[in-house]
Image (cartoon, rainbow, N blue to C red):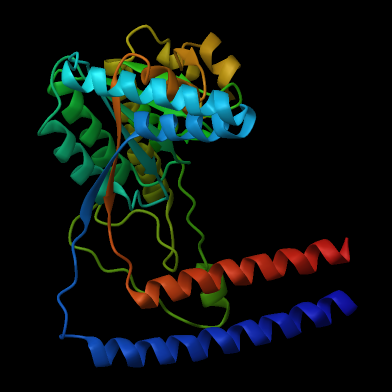
Length: 335
C-alpha cells in the first residue's frame, strides 16, 4: 500500500508539473508565433576517419610516455601533411541512421539524407544505413523502404547494419540492401502482418447506445470498433490482411532471391546467428566494427539531417525523460 500511495502522489505531482509546463509553453509559443519562420532542417556531415584519429591521439597521450607521444605526434603530422600534398583517391562510405517507430516518423529525415548522398555518391562509393525498428504501418514502412530502393537504382552499393532490432517493417527496409550486417544478438525477421481491433458493440448495446456505420461502397469499412461486425466483414478484413502479407513476401523475395521466403514468412523473428543460418542476414558484425574497418579503405562520412527542435519540444522531451527516470527509481526502491 505504501508503494501505491507513493506512486499516486508521484503521479499527481507529475500531472501538475506537466499541465503547468504546457500552459506556460503554449503561452510563450503564442507570443513568439509569427515572429520567426520555422526552420526546415539542415545537413550535418562529419568525417568519421578524423574522429577515429582523435580517439587514437587521446589514447596515445594517456598510455605513452610524454617523450614517445611527442615523437609519435610529430611523425603523424608529417605523414598527414605528406598525404595531403599527394592525396590518393579513395572510395567514400556514407553512414546514415534510421530509428523507426510505428509510423516510421523519421522517413522525412531519411529521404533528405538519401537525396543529399545521391547528389555526390558515385559507383565506387557505398551507403551504410544503421536501422533500428520494430516495424509499424505497412504504407509508412513501404515509403521508408522505397528511399533505400533509390540507392539501389542509382547503382550504389547499399549495406544495412542492424545492432539491436529490425523486425517487420524494419526488416522490409533491410532486405533492399546488397548485404545485411547484424550483431550476433540482433533480432531480425518477423515477416508477417498483424492487426488488433477492439470492439465494444455489445457494451454499447447493453446500455442502449446506437452506433451507425454508414458507408458508400460495399467494402469501405470492414471491422469497426463500435459497430456490429459481421462474418462477411471479418472475412474481408482477413482477406486484406493476407494480401498485405503476400505483398510483403513478394517484396522480400525480390531483393533476397536466395532466401526461402515461405519458410521464414511466419511472423517469427530470430537472433543474429540463427538468422544468418536462415539466410536472413549475411554478416555477423556490429555496425561499429563494420564502420571502423571501412575507415581503413575509404573516407567515411556520417550524414545526418537535423530538424531543430522548438523550445517547447525540448522542454517536454526533458520532462518525459525526468518522469521516466523518477518512476524507475521508485520501482527499484520498492524491489
